[in-house]
Length: 355
Image (cartoon, rainbow, N blue to C red; front, top):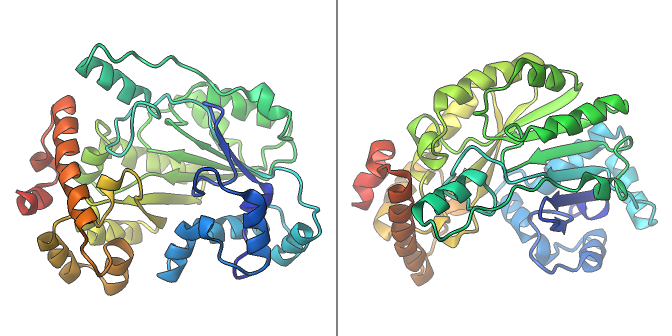
């Protein structure tokens, strides 16, 4: 039980590009049979290192979250689920994550034109030689051949921006029509989309809905990292989310651009009674929290708790950290120019330390 994870058996993530994986945290070309064998043998398989790293620092990993969630929403004891895995009885998809399209209203700093239509438009405007990507929605008919939506226990819609993609609401209406409005529905959203009354009505029909809001900082920090979104739009939507669900959480992505504001962000989460999970950026490497000069790391060591510092930065400053930091400066300049904004207007404290 110390290593068991339900995702290799009952989880699947499918993107509109037809890419498919059992878990988004797994490396490319992973060996699912080896992973299953290791986990059942109590071995912390290297493929799941991202979860082991979080658990090592006392933070809740995606493995632990998904185990608890399936235990609750399937109404089955986790030990029984593991026994089924050992006996080869787990052979259906119960937890499904769909990235249905790349339609999105934001140009988040860690994103790209392959995952956001707004990024694609910005790239094209910056350089007309870069073609606009064609709109494409996921092939639901193909997915229905391998997933029984009536039996589905958990469905997570990610982006692009799932609340910005109108066809996602057709999928939600289908779930209602087939009588599975009890599915645990997770909307992974940037929280900025102004919903219509009809869309709000559809969302309100789901008995178990979670809004997993991507909040990587508050106020101007949020607006810089997720340009051109507005903090006021997000806070207004949070009020609506709370009207129809008491399950509001946040995927908090930690990078070298917001780690200086980490304490401020955590205080906001706590003040607003919001459950959050911290996910340090691994790629692109120039956004890793440790991709900073030693001078700023010294400041962070004074500000952050020992646990947070070791989780985000680590004890050793490497040449690779310095190279990634130099790449960060180049990438920020490129993005700020394309977006016609200045870091100093949004992150003045970090800007002053950098320059």
